Amino acid sequence: MSRIKESIVLALSIIGLGAFLYSAIIGVKDRERFINVRGLAEQEVKADYVIWPIVFKEVGNDLSALYETVQTKTQALEKFLSENGISKDEIGNASPDITDSESELYNNEKRPYRYVATVVVTVASKNVDKIRELMGKQGELLKQGIAFSEGDYRYRKVYSFNGLNNIKPAMIEEANKNARTAAQKFATDSGSKLGKIKSATQGQFSIEDRDENTPFIKKVRVVTNVQYFLED
Image 1 (spheres, rainbow, N blue to C red):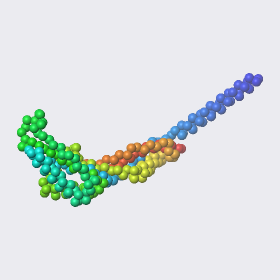
Image 2: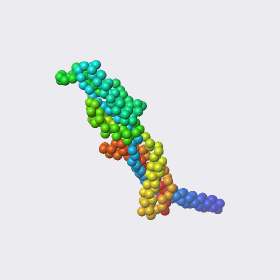
Image 3: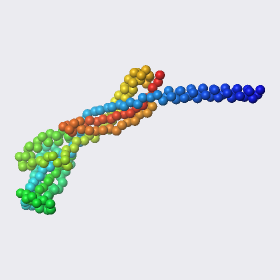
Image 4: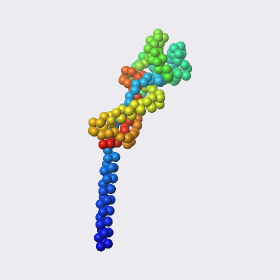
């Protein structure tokens, strides 16, 4: 008789344990209902730093005379920059690059000038508006015989934006808000309630030119990934 009671008690215990486990599994599944959404934030900003390589070339057959011409025109260029509010700290002047056509072993073409000097004066400044204004005054230097050499990719103008830390918090907040709005819409459409955040990751910030014609205007972009629990 005692064995029968023990068997009954054991059977009831197993049934009770099974019911408990079933309830726990259902609860876990409910908690695992979630939605993954992305939140985007974009902002246009003005570049706050510019590097402007000013390039001009001189040719000649007399190396000493060529060097004197290069020095004279470089000083005229630096004077122009100084008179227009560019400080010495913002101007970098490298030694001219001299090419000797007669030293080129595989060039049999006869050229009118033996030497070609490439001069690069680099302006690096935080005053982007002032530098852009000066770029429009290059014609004044043409009157002094200084003709700029354009089109060489090595000496292209570079605009950058270094104030990302100042706008990061607001942009992340906006991205998270947009993510929640999308999640709320999905939850409502599916007949669910939006629960707490399950996980969230912040994407990388990207800074790109707005377009190829306005490189001094930058587009800052960030995408956040957020998972929300869904409730009945």
